[in-house]
Length: 276
Image 1 (cartoon, one colour):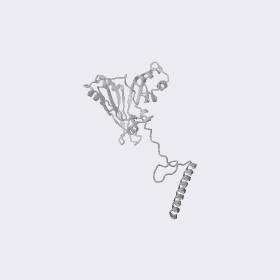
Image 2 (cartoon, helix red, strand yellow):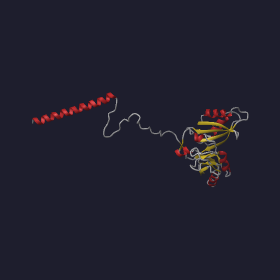
Image 3 (cartoon, helix red, strand yellow):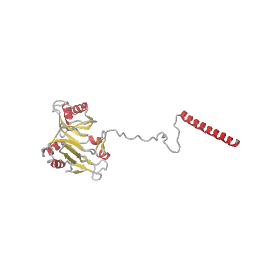
Image 4 (cartoon, one colour):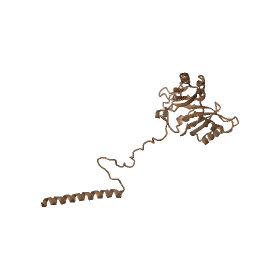
């Protein structure tokens, strides 16, 4: 009977020592300010410089580079919808393409990536895809890469089918160009228009330049969180002063980089600093 008693005491002492050692280990970690290292599984704190990259903010708004633009229409019917689509698809504008990588530019030059001379395509289609919902009175348009579509061009094509753009419901697309006329005696009209559009706070980015060849002001704009309406943009221009008017507006296709990414990247110079 004595031998089992000694064994019981020995086991009890061993257990007590194990608990004491564990407590000492825990106290050591607490004193050092570090987390205990867990062997055989679990996550340990990464060493400095080896932290995992933070995931992209999924909630950040992104403007799709492939989503079509919605254009409200007046006069579209089930009978003329097909003819309207054909008329829009017939709009062409010359572009310059790289023979190697198919990059598209609006002006003659060399490919930035391949350094090859760009080749002109005189009959390039402006619109990649178009559909008309006569019931809703809406047309969806997807532009071809590197293309620009002026509303005046759109209205001419629609007018041939007795259809018009409903400018009262039209919003300015993600990337657009406003073509503006200024009074002949205006001083520094470029800065005047820049200030008027900036003060209006309709767009997240505004860049104004003067096209000397065409004698017009071009404001390149990028949409803000809430798209501006056509009327808002027109009113903002008129507030620049007597004689300032918005004569036209153009939709512009995303640049190749944004098209590849799948969304229009905020502040992308390739998209909203083009020369179209």
